[in-house]
Image 1 (cartoon, rainbow, N blue to C red):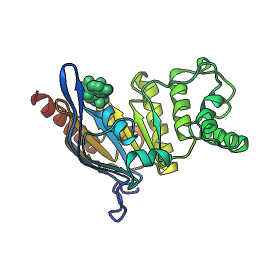
Image 2: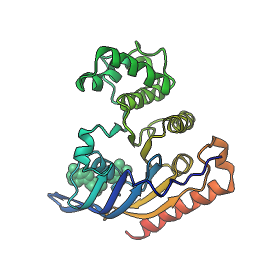
Image 3: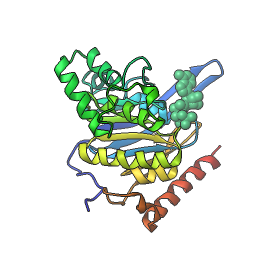
Image 4: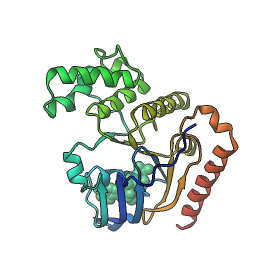
Length: 267
Ligand SMILES: Nc1ncnc2c1ncn2[C@@H]1O[C@H](COP(=O)(O)OP(=O)(O)OP(=O)(O)O)[C@@H](O)[C@H]1O
């Protein structure tokens, strides 16, 4: 079994130092992120967990250059998030699959490739490869409504993978799915991560999902949005759902739960 730790010699892929983001609203300032420090190494699977409003989405959006921090520094591959975006450093998977209903599954995956100006031949190659990666080979010509919710979410992951970015940012991608489907997708996502070696940032509200998927779990708390615990998981990288019955799994889940409770007591 491989070890979950990342070699120390590699510089972090994502580095946040004393990061702040305050939104100015009509009701006064909202401190969405306050003093956030975090290093994410290459090939790590990092989950962000915490109650609504603790800044999970905001942090992911800062990495993706969709929000501008008001203090501190944030680098992605040693660059500003904006430069990293231009260098196509990451793919982003949103809460809802967000597929265009008038385009086929292949057409949806192809869309960002068309916009980026890939050749027709390269587009076809990448659509085929990413559909295989998410176990949807043969569904290219179907329309989104012909697929189940879980399959649509997988298609949306394929779209984020299509330009082969090293970093995958996923904002609660399986939140709306039932538990059995979610379990299955969690296993598939782990297999995909292990095949591709990508660095993944994953937002979730589910403790078992965070513990099952991650090499690192970041526990956050609201008002102001901040990190209250960072847990480096000692679970082996190769895992199946059975690992949820082990003592190690339950110990980590317990620590996450305690972290969430401590954050609530702060209110
Ligand atoms: N564009 C915005 N303008 C003003 N306030 C915002 C904006 N975006 C987010 N916020 C506020 O910042 C805080 C953090 O929001 P964020 O969406 O990051 O939380 P979250 O942890 O992802 O929550 P959830 O689990 O509900 O998705 C919240 O109080 C939210 O209302």
